[in-house]
Length: 222
Image (cartoon, rainbow, N blue to C red; front, side, top):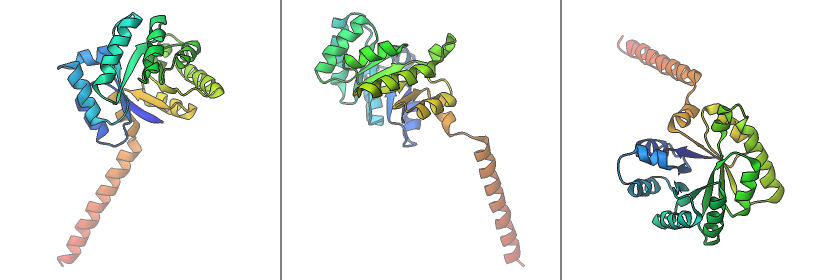
């Protein structure tokens, strides 16, 4: 499963990219608004930091506006993917943009039928929001499984980007289901690496090594 960071923080993105396992980044207007600086410059710096798909979301609500913004975002850098909401206008825009060879990530997917329509419109990625469904007592991971099954049945050239992943177990479940991509906040990404037994084991190894060195030093001084 490819791992994307869901953030516009250059600090977080640089730290994640330094580990060599980050495949892309998803942003949205809310995330970009949290950062100081020009959004275009931030996106370009993200593209320079991570050589993979970088989602930039449109804010227009009509198809014409989405297409105009989408062309602008896609024209900034080859890595930028246009993010459109799953609405009727979003489908229209996706059909036009994908027909022009621009990759689209259709976001705010909450049902299998939305994902099906997005794929038929030419979206390259669909983003089911797992955590937000969990928030309303609906199993979000079941949506990911349903979309994967539909896409496998019809061999759509569209990747399932599991979004709104709130904790490491969401990532595990998405990977077990075969989601092509999981996007997550940096805090969740950092949690994938942490385990208390790793920390305890490493401390024990280092303590034992220091003890052995002291004993060898003591013997050498006799």
